[in-house]
Length: 144
Image 1: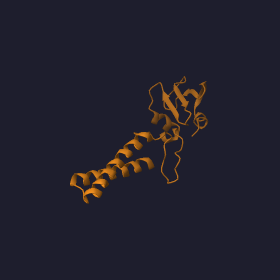
Image 2 (image 1 turned 90 degrees about the vertical axis):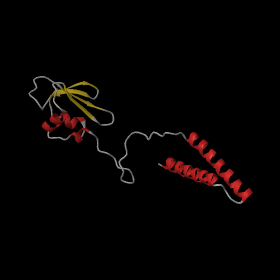
Image 3 (image 1 turned 90 degrees about the horizontal axis):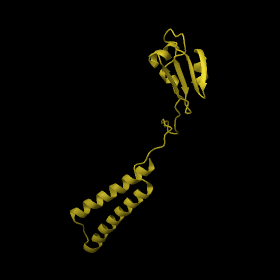
Image 4 (image 1 turned 180 degrees about the horizontal axis):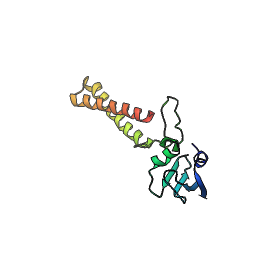
């Protein structure tokens, strides 16, 4: 819902700044403007009654739901809801590459042991499995 649609349902609307308005609260007998409405750049409408009315009471008095104060969610290609925030990665690409380099060195050392002795010890085998798991985990981390 746009701010204009919400404001058209209110009485005593007055603009107090860009995207900021005051009006009489529809949830109680209001003689002066005690309701603050702010339209955020992302389309979210912030509503606050300085007389103490709950937001649910205010939007209910207008025949609306709380969800009406938020823009509709966009679906991604797979039908998943995506937030507007970028995904924060725990590791940088350079850190992942450095870790993968170490794991590949471990794998090469185990392969060298196989070439020299024709077999690996249980410790070397466990280390090989752990390195392969870490490489696969890094691949999954990078593809998310």
